[in-house]
Length: 193
Image (cartoon, rainbow, N blue to C red):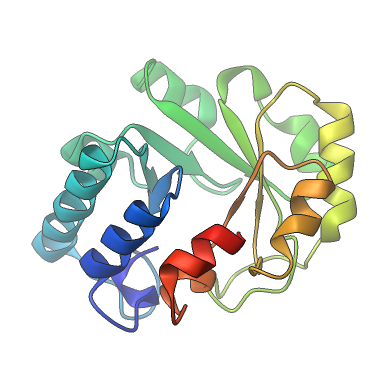
């Protein structure tokens, strides 16, 4: 998440989510209403500290310089973002995640240099303005069958009600924003996910 996804203080939301048991966090400060410059860095440092305190990997979405400034544990990139081989070369010890949404992207991706795949969007999502067409849980099953040992995270439009379908299709985990940031009770939302 980023501040633009939060109806209230993102520091409070992440603190509650961390206490509830999330297993990783991706700082995605981009899009309409996103912070920039020093304000973005300050928020990133606050969120990084929460992750550090709870032993949760802190991943930055597609911003190599910000990942370096914040001492991120990893970087998540999309198909149109930074080149995975270059990111791995620059950060040999960081987690690197890569989004894939179709067979061609999967076949052309340098899977040997990434630590996990984000497959989706599984369902329609309102969080990302430029999201691709939803691929459904069958895409998760297909990626899992082709790459049984590569960690796989379902992304896009996943809710507390649909997360179990994504896991049953073969994902190791799910990535959500609104399911937590807009939850009335974050503890319940994390438990249900």
